[in-house]
Amino acid sequence: MKLSTRRAGFTLIELLVVIAIIAVLIALLLPAVQQAREAARRTQCKNNLKQLGLALHNYHDNFGRFAPGTISRTGGSFGGPEWPYLIHFILPNLDQAATYNILATNWGRPGPWIDPTQWPITLQMGIPALQCPSDNQGGSNKMVGTGVNLPTTNYMGFFSGLNDGQTAADAGTSRAAFGINRGASIRDFLDGTSNTMLMAEYLTGTPTDWRGWFYTNRAGAQYLHATNPPNSSVPDNLLDYPYACTAAVNLPQQNLPCVADGNTPNNFSTSRSRHVGGAQALLADGSVRFISANINLSTWQYLAWMADGNVIGEF
Image 1: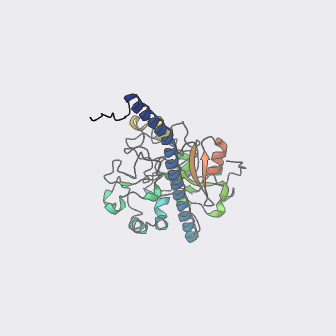
Image 2: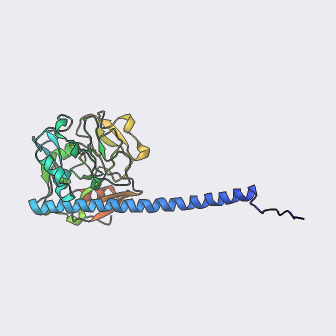
Image 3: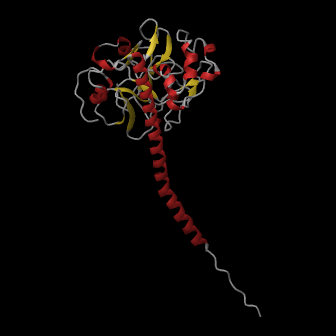
C-alpha cells in the first residue's frame, strides 16, 4: 500500500509577504541606483567643461586671447551674421576639425534661418562634448524652424552685463570674459582667473525652442548672464518669438521658466542645470566648480565679471 505524501508549498499569504519584501527592497535600492547614475552623469558633465576649458586655453595660446563670444558686422546685437559663436572657434580642439573647416569658409554667410543651404548634413549631428548627460529634454540638435537640425549645447559663455542691452554696450565693471566681436585675454582678468567664470551650464529647453541652440546672438541661445543665481525660480526673459518663449515652453516645474518679452534690451538668461542644488561652472584658470543655487547673488555676479574689483569670499 502506497502512502500518499503531500508536497509542501508556499501559501498565498506567504507569497504575498515575499513579494512585499522584494518590493520594499527595490524601493530602498532604486534611489541609491539613481544617485549613483546621477553622480556618474555629473562627473561626465564636469569633464565636458574641463575639455572646453582646455580648448579655450589652447585657443588663447595660439591667438593671445580667448575666442570671440559672437560675431557682428555692426558691432552690436543682431548685426549679422550673428551665428558664429565661441564654441565654433574652438572646435578643432574638441576633435571637431572637419566641422570647423566647413564652418570656417562660411563665417560671413547669413544665419541658418536665412540661408539653410550652407549647413550640410555633416554639420547637423549633435556633438557629445557639448551635452550634459543629465539634461535629456531638448536633445542634442534642433531645427527650430530653420529647415536644418543643428547641434545644441549645455555649456554657454558668460557675456557682459545683466541683459542683452548691457551685453551690446559691453562696458563698465560688469564686463565678462566674452562679448560681441571680443574674447578676453588673461591680462584682462584683474580679479584673477580663479575668481572669474568663463562658462556655466544651461538647459537645452524643449525640442521646439531655441534654448541651447547656439546659432543666434540672443539670450538663451548664445548669451548667458549672471542676472540670477543658478536654477533660479525667476523666469528667464526671452524674445517673444515662436521659437524662443511661448506658453508651451514656459515650464517652471522642469526648471525652464521663461517670460516672453519683445525684441528688447531686457532679455536675459541665467545658468540652469538638472543637477540638484546648483550648476557646474568653468573658471578662467581652467578649473571646474559646482556652484550652489544658494550662492549670494552679489558673489555670483562678481564671479561672472572679470574686473569689477570686488573681493570674493567662499563659494
